[in-house]
Image (cartoon, rainbow, N blue to C red; front, top):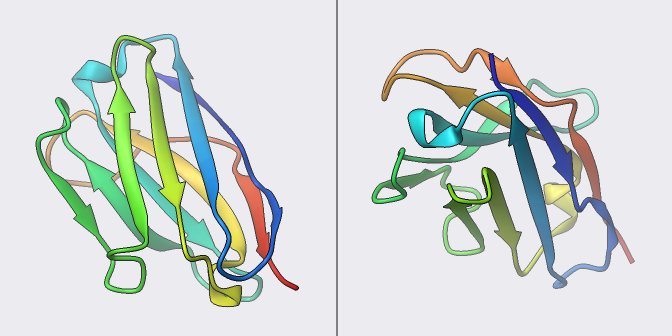
Length: 119
């Protein structure tokens, strides 16, 4: 199992930026597909973005495409989510996740970090 700890959340005004980090321990993340998910109050958890083992391939949900960017630094065992042009509807708890395969369910999860977009 790989342990994941998210950080970087907070309060930001609409149009602002944040960078979330996900620090991994226990295993090297170079063996894991990494993803970000979010859960807004009263809603189901939803997929945000994912990145392949070496970072060659990324996938985004339509709602964040062009505004959020996922990246990884395997040497630092860390994954990032750069969030630009934030909107109130981006308000949610953001979770980092990992899986060994290129497809299938994510089975390693962090505790989440809260992002609030409000004026």
